[in-house]
Image 1 (cartoon, rainbow, N blue to C red):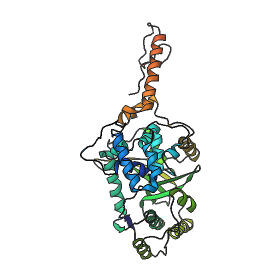
Image 2 (cartoon, rainbow, N blue to C red):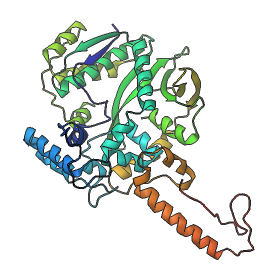
Image 3 (cartoon, one colour):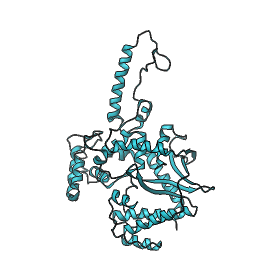
Length: 402
């Protein structure tokens, strides 16, 4: 039975947000607000929320979950700076693993990605815009095309929720081995010493027997993306038990919920604990006849019409991929500060929700203004600018971050 198993409990995306990150968001959004007084005076933070209101919500959560008080205190004292001394982003944002999505966001603009953690309310609002929600709806519809039978199973613990994903993986592996197409396939592993998690949009075997990985990207414009956008898409299509248990902080001996045990038995699985289910999955993966991915493909679909815009084959270059990943991980490990876009890609700033408060953009604009001013002073008046914006000695004039 090729079923899509869902949980009755809300669950985070596979690796896109850790429990600690969820606490960070909860501290600002999930505690009961004072509806009669949306702002209680005092200073207002960069995300438009009263700092006094935020502190009251955090105090409420500390009383509700005293065992997590140390986490909420860190949220209360959170700095809005892009980087803080003597603390890596992994430590600052309480992360134990990364998602492939986060690497893709880094390839677009690392500063924007960092602001998403520093100012979670702005990011949440961005994730609710029409383009994002429409894209999510299209992905869900495509998933249900190949998984029409949805089975709802009650999940009581975090181990139950992760167990549901493992069961889905078991069913998808079986489907792939029989030549069926699968969508929303969870993946995890270690790259350059960092634990990663993600979701593959689509896996299928071609007529020639090749295993093809496809990533669906929806676009509001009926055209293929620019190279700068394709870079992140290609990265997304490219990335053991102890790692999984350690990085997700799961209890391997946790007994699965009764509803979940009943479902596993109906599938012919004899697993009572999370460890037993995970061990079974690893045995299946080890004995599977599935081999490495042969092709990486990007598929672009128009959001309004649903029509296919086009596809692009992506060359898998492992050496270059690992070089890029090492560069991205240098930020997460605190070896460097976040890097924003350079002037050639400053057009990205026009669609960024942090444009007006971005430290990187402001600093770069000030530097360019000084460079332009100095160039104009040093340039003789008789040197008429060329059509390409350069003066006679070849220096660029009038470059701005817009």
